[in-house]
Image (cartoon, rainbow, N blue to C red; front, side):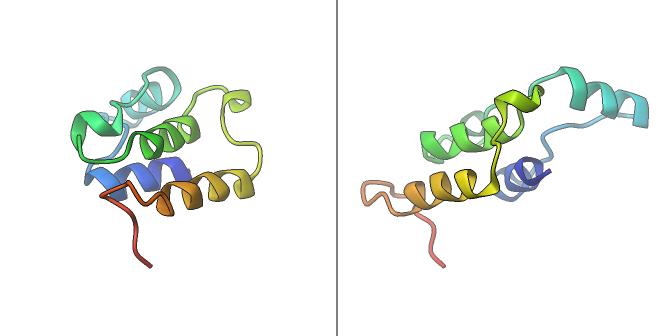
Length: 88
């Protein structure tokens, strides 16, 4: 669920939408969300990769540990060539 929250925070839109609960659940289970960079081309590519990995359908394809995801986010944040660096 952290992937969905990050996706919405970064793009202003939900990764999955549906007219009904059934259609929403179908989206969550079967349809990959649009890449972040399609919605905001200025977002760094590595950030897109992190969020999209967190949204993978198969649990084995997602982060195993929250610490691993946090480490990747820290790396993106500290990249000096990244014009969209986060500020705390």
